Length: 312
View 1 (cartoon, helix red, strand yellow):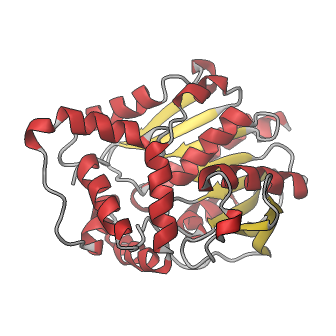
View 2 (cartoon, rainbow, N blue to C red):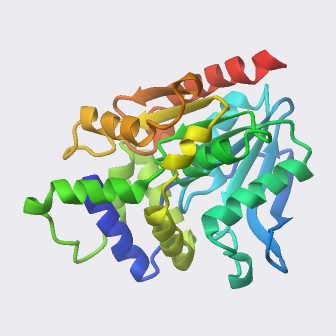
């Protein structure tokens, strides 16, 4: 299934309020929990229960943000690798993987903007000193957005297989394939979707399970926002270190690894080169933490040692 087919499937699923599932495993052990952490959202009259946060470990602060319809558990292996050196704040966003959806009054300007504001409020309330934000997919988009808009509050960002302008990529792929467009699928096979997101068979049922634990309305609306969002102009404002970890099998078998890499490089071309580095997981699909966990955690660890611990 290529990127265009995947996105058509996303819309078919969310139209009938079936949540798009992108993740997870078993609960991560925690030393502290801030359940449904409530933060004030500008321009609204009510508090926003925007996410749940589990806090593990001691040391420099790291925020771990999962993707659409994902729970904190997607970071299980990363938590195990980092918990002895860092204080990890592991998020599950509202509406996903069993967390209560945002109320209509709390949605604000948009889910994406509301979550950015809520994360910054959380950083301030917890008195975190320029934490590094690590995000997967939707979380990667949020990490990039925070790097571009709030360099005074975060120390860096790791973008795990996220894109700043998903809709633009969809449109470009559709334009290239106008002569051979495939019809939208007549039925939705969640296991087929899971297999398209990870090679690791042990993750497939986890992905399917979280798909059905997420709120379909939230998944559909947020997917719509991501399709309309375009961070590319703002990326030029980035002044903190950023690492993008891409998955080169994300479009297999219809898109070659070289084409996938070119998509990442084109979409992120506006990030100033002195602040940005790429690394690519050659054999991984979208869930790098499923297909190449050691590779993922090695690159994250090296980034943190260079840009966070090294500045202490």
